[in-house]
Length: 144
Image (cartoon, rainbow, N blue to C red; front, side):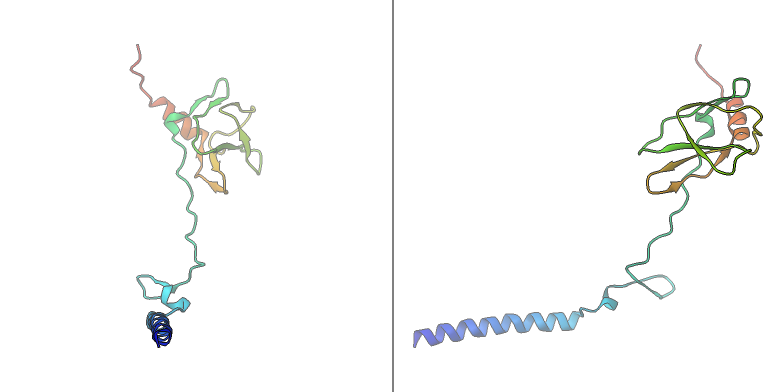
């Protein structure tokens, strides 16, 4: 008699727990629609929607040094494995450069662009050599 009560007790407990779990799953819903986010317009977003990659901030012109006489471009260190790129006015594509780079003769400062790239294909906005040159003129050093 004791075995039947124990067996009946375990079976009832199992069914009770299984039944509660089923009711909870059915009540809360297991479908994909219940987990989708809703934006301000009320349209459902799917989990596969990714935010668009915005362009990175433009380089700080006041931190870059450019000497028109020597055509030497001195760039600052970039965080997170960034790489400096220069797109000359006479070429269609940009090329990577190091922290110090001497530019070829005959480039138009208004058309030559400097920008940086980060791993994953993120590209910054570009600045021109003319902007870098003009920012360098405004710099006032307090070193004596």
